[in-house]
Length: 75
Image (tube, rainbow, N blue to C red; front, side, top):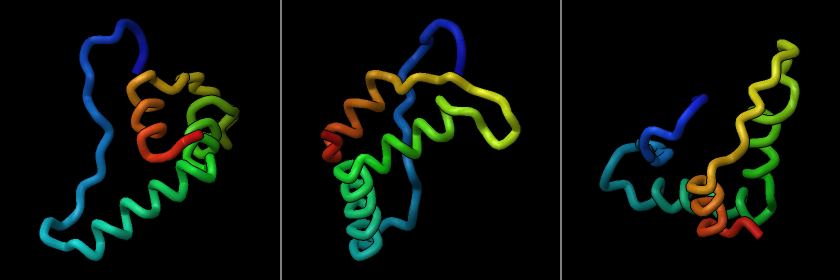
């Protein structure tokens, strides 16, 4: 999480395979969150701003994650 970039490990979510209805729900939710900018706002809330504990992680969004969000519809 800190220091030199060692490797690229994609973010992911795992759920039951062969469930096209649930797959569609997950994909639709992420697309909706990306296009409404809520996905970016949620990232900023937990990784850039002060946490409820008073700590700040100050972890800027990686170029790879930003690209994924843009593919999903982030303006």
